[in-house]
Image (cartoon, rainbow, N blue to C red; front, side):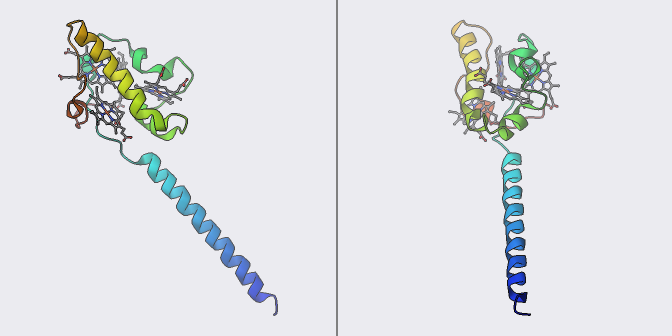
Length: 119
Ligand code: HEC
Ligand code: HEC
Ligand code: HEC
Ligand code: HEC
């Protein structure tokens, strides 16, 4: 009977470790699934562009999925999302604007960061 407490101790430690691992996993999953700022984007406004200008994942072997899901989940790029998406979206709008063409929002946050009814 003298070893029972040790067995219990081991069991308790194992249970705690499992619990911590589960919490860490759930928190990580939660972080990955956490909503990003809403963005309004309509394909109807972007019919002049080629699909692959934005959907690079179909040609560069990064794989399939939705832009935001992937960019939020993939730790090699998740910390770059703000910079990369601003670069993609705003640089084209700014370029078109400077050429006097139709363009989307160049700067005003709320013109992009608002939810929309489009897919
Ligand atoms: C041309 C559209 C556009 C404009 C203008 C714009 N953004 Fe963004 N922004 C995006 C997109 C697209 C993303 C990436 C997807 C997302 O966050 O939903 C993004 C991402 C972000 C993120 C990271 C979001 C996250 O949840 O990690 C922040 C913060 C942000 N923008 C702030 C701003 C601020 C502040 C301004 C104004 C100074 C601004 N944005 C203007 C399109 C825009
Ligand atoms: C200017 C950039 C851009 C271009 C060009 C573009 N897309 Fe997209 N597409 C996006 C973004 C950003 C999303 C993410 C959806 C959202 O946030 O509303 C998306 C989402 C999608 C989805 C998933 C929609 C959903 O909610 O399940 C499909 C399918 C799609 N695009 C097809 C296309 C096709 C086909 C073309 C070419 C005819 C195209 N896209 C051109 C940026 C673009
Ligand atoms: C399957 C995952 C995945 C999907 C889906 C995806 N991306 Fe990416 N994206 C990546 C990865 C990984 C990189 C980094 C690639 C590299 O560095 O070579 C990247 C890079 C980028 C960059 C930076 C490119 C550069 O040259 O600096 C932009 C902008 C971008 N993605 C936008 C989008 C948009 C918009 C969509 C949806 C229309 C999308 N991505 C869909 C994984 C994905
Ligand atoms: C390669 C060029 C290009 C890229 C990349 C691009 N856009 Fe645009 N965007 C345009 C053009 C051109 C228009 C104007 C369309 C029109 O007026 O018919 C536009 C219009 C818009 C509008 C509508 C503005 C309004 O006044 O109704 C929004 C919102 C927008 N873009 C968001 C985005 C977001 C978010 C991204 C990145 C995910 C993006 N755009 C990427 C070219 C681009």
